[in-house]
Length: 255
Image 1 (tube, rainbow, N blue to C red):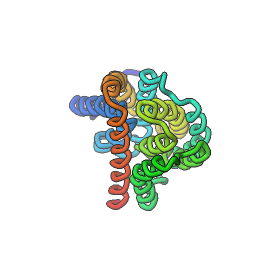
Image 2: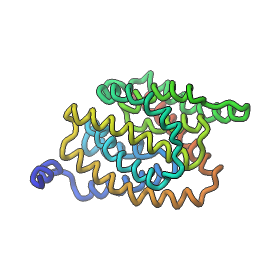
Image 3: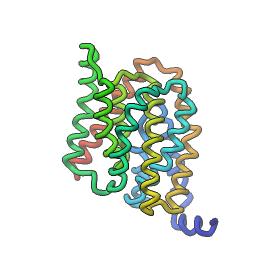
Image 4: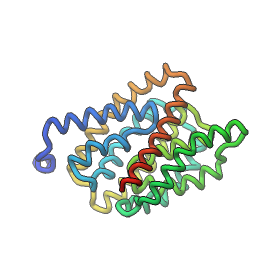
């Protein structure tokens, strides 16, 4: 076992290990505050070191530990009703998306998703002022589409944040509910990747390193959130949604 691990990790320097661990801790703190970060930040380091192919499986495994840490920290704030609305709708297409994840990203899809994410913040605020929100039925329908994207890409969590906020969740309740839903999605993705043979010793080891750094990051993030006014936290979540949409748009335009 140790021999196969040593062979799988050969060629990765201590500096690269330190870079992965350091960014994983930072991404965990960002994600614990904003609900989003690991899927957007970690590819910046992982892709140059390992190439694009193993990144989605690596992040799927590490996300299980990352989100489990958030659930442990925020478990009393989980909205189980909305969790049960989202997961059954998202899982079937998530499995399909995970199976064909290398083929599901396209320029047109990126432009559409990025635009809708950026528009979702002002639209949600406008509808809230007029007394509208995303109903359970609307959340269920949007979850099906999100499941396909989440199964086949990294960084789709920002879409879930926008959906949960449009459904009426605020503050740390968004982070907590997002984490529980993401665990269910993560188990589905890891199962598909395992059956497809894309999970090796190297992927498991790097994912374990990132997951280990997520535990202290979650507790650091909780300390920050506990001291943060709800309006400030909501503004951060809105900013993350807009930034995530802008990144998708930029990626689609330059593709």
